[in-house]
Image (cartoon, rainbow, N blue to C red; front, side):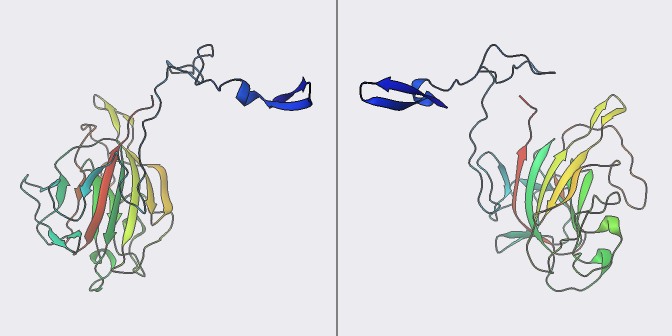
Length: 258
């Protein structure tokens, strides 16, 4: 936008942006429904600046749970130090049991990379089986589902025992794969479920669940049901007897809207 101005030398074009500054916000606009903030509110806190990661690396505000160097953020089920094997910048399941984070989380964004064994020695659920459990209770399945027939709700990226992934994008055995997961913990009021847990799962860059609700706590050969529990809990990686490897694991806690 702009306007024409007459001078002794003739017509010139005057830019409105050079004549006035853009406002940083407003104080005379209506209040947003369900919010204490107005539309374009000048007093509303601006988003903090975060440096994004490159090629799956952690953004600047993430907590790095595993960078290939140590297992300091992890412990075994009995609370002792995790004993998984460290090899070539990855941690590998070695039969010492599942591990869980020392810290607890609620609603999160999780990134992790995993690889099933290159040498295929079994089939169905015996092939590259592991899993990631949110709050230690809600599992997104890890499995070598490349050219491997197994039940649908047990495939790689399934919400185990509940929802199969929309598509199978599993890579070949031994190749690195990515999970990017947004998890929202359930909410309870006393013994009453107010909001189910839900997850958006991106496997190797492809959305396979979008804001899909868990039917309840992960179980095996049974109908999942909810039981009241705290809104926060550890992240757990499963030892299912297969030497699955993990690397580049980071997490971001999701705050409420401001």
